[in-house]
Length: 228
Image (cartoon, rainbow, N blue to C red):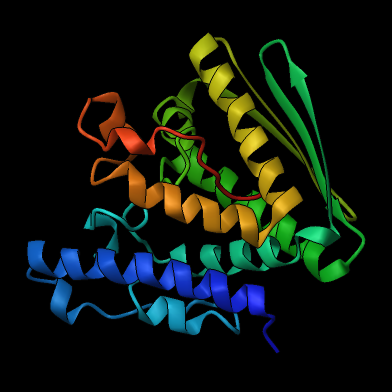
């Protein structure tokens, strides 16, 4: 059974995704007939039906990246981790050229979700298939993916991830993103809800638009993303 916080987060995310889908339909002939993905996680199907379709990435206030075949599964795992944040233990070590994170859980199911999420996001980084809802740091990381060295070690309870780079801008983005994820682990649905609000405030261009001077100045605050 869903808790009240889960209803609040699902409703907030659904509102953002639904607005995005509506705008996508106006800008794309495929929008009106696009098939909706199954969320892949019980309790969040309504959010998927409200806007997580293939054309959703074109909307101004939805996800910052175009949806693909694995987006629904990734979203389901992400939401599971957000709602089980109190069961996750995470430490971050800042390196001169990047970060080392240890993200684990004593709960076997959550530990498996951590591993699945890290594996998926690492694969996306290698393939350049960005999965981003409202992070201002991930665009920098994905735009410079070929210059990032990654090492992933899976443990019985989760994963140890080390990512390094030579470009100071990329190092700063890696460290800032680690902080974003830590906030999600600490605050769970509260942090996710804050991120959704900030995504709306960013305007149509998102963080890439902000760097080009096209996004809403009100959306310059810190954004949050997924548990890596």
